[in-house]
Length: 132
Image (cartoon, rainbow, N blue to C red; front, top):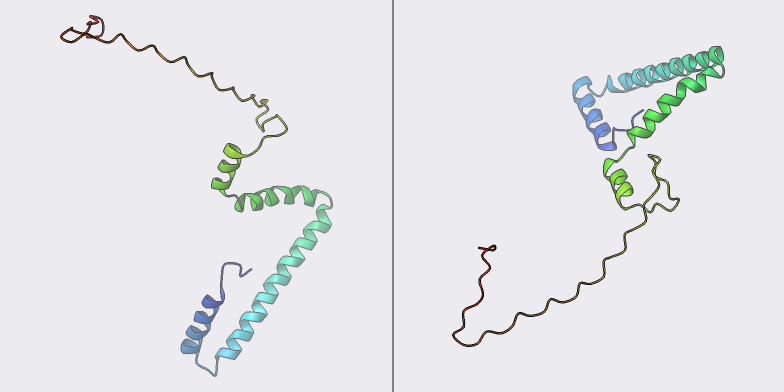
């Protein structure tokens, strides 16, 4: 229940309660909060047990979407993208139903171009009218 509250926050709340309520009323207020939290937890547990008793096997079907939402809560988009891009697809079928394509082999190296003939001193290079 207090998953997002750390010890530092609890300490700050305790110190604020000490200043607001004073040392003589703080223990009574803490006991009242504890009793109230226990009652709320008992009500929630009783309601869940009552629903489970009335619905029977349908209760598990109702909990399935909530469990799926809980899994999405722990979803890390960066991790999923990295897995899809760089993950090893060993079974050959992707989640969308398409088969994995084999890697294209690299092209063989091209033959080197022959060097143009050397010009004699004072000779003008040939001009390609289509290139200019």
